[in-house]
Image (cartoon, rainbow, N blue to C red; front, top):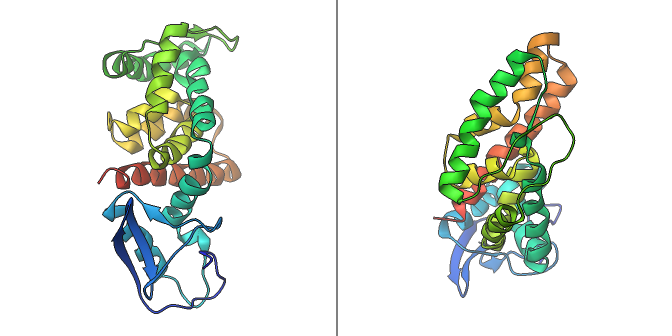
Length: 236
């Protein structure tokens, strides 16, 4: 059974406990991913969220209204088959983390970055055992290999569902540290998103907001919030 049939063919969506976790069922028939794998998720909370998305569908299925389903599909069909490669890609963000590359001016922006970003690097040193160094300007400066290796090991330790969420938290924020801060609940998720947008907010304050850019940013904002929710669902 394809998870992405165009028209609704079921009456009731529910869940069932199965080997390896929880399955989503449509009138008692188990849902599969687009790659035809069983849609088995690690927690009851995640299965219930997916079932609720299916139950809320109208006559035709709209995948854009099913973010938990889509993330679970990604974890099963994609991340599970290339976990190491995905983890390596995300760990590489530590070598060019958003929080580490600071403006050379104006002094107000330099001060704002230090005031708001330095505490997150301090947190990472305490919570993750890794201290990233900062640099002024955009020229790349290599981090300590031991530091990056330590962070990489923590990325690789995430399971497939956690890693699917972590992928979006890191790639949308541009920061490995902010991604870790999200999954460790170091700060409210909205505050972490605001930190990732510090430079853009500064530009808007100076020159005004661009409607198109603001709309694109809001799409990313909502995706960031969803990734945080998906990670939490994988824990319950």
